[in-house]
Amino acid sequence: MTAEESPTARAYRGVAAADRQAQRRAKLLDATLDLWGDPARPRVTMTAVCQRAGLTERYFYESFTHLDDALFAVLEQIAVEIEHTTVEALHAAGGDPTDRVEASITAFVQILTEDPRKGRAAIVESAHVETTREPRALLLRRFAELSASEARRLYGARSWGEAEGVLVATMFVGGVAQLVTSWLDGSLSATPEEIVEAAARNFTLTAHPRTGQSDVRSGD
Image (tube, rainbow, N blue to C red; front, side):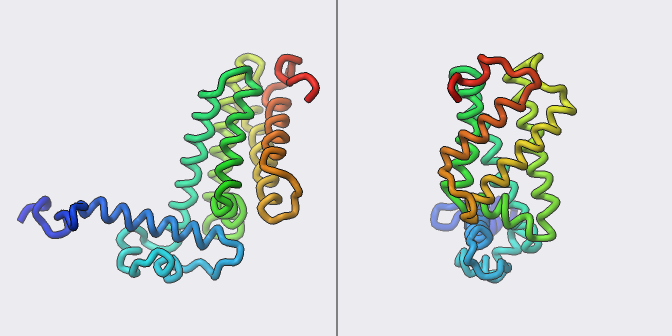
């Protein structure tokens, strides 16, 4: 019997084995996010994830070696969504650099506030789990490098050099992460729109060393 003819490769109710496995993995990731991003959740365990997904532990091990793998996968899934969505929003927006920065930051904040599970998992809870602290730090570093790169695209010769740009972008990303954290835990009384406005203003004023009047809306 060839691999293509094996029982594991056959379609079941019209769905190929690989597609069924992908569907189970997606269920497990959503269950992990659901538990990890819930402030009133029980402790996140493999058993709890399987129960939330409605799958047996056998299917957990089909996709992940241990719980940390699922947590890392959730972080990466959120990171990829943020990267793609914010860059797409930046490039699709018309107008001056300020308009484009605002569009990108709006996309970022919307991801983390419209589905608070993602904000809590990626920004808040990942900092409290020993095994995900380093991946979280790497995630924030990726966002800082992306921010610095896009600043060079936006402002060209007026932008910071590569090394300085990463330093400034790291402070920017850390500040936005803290804003989102404070909003999620209720200690910050602000709307998502106000967070976007504050973050966009900060980026516009700090992304390059020589801010011209044309880079900031009059009256802002």
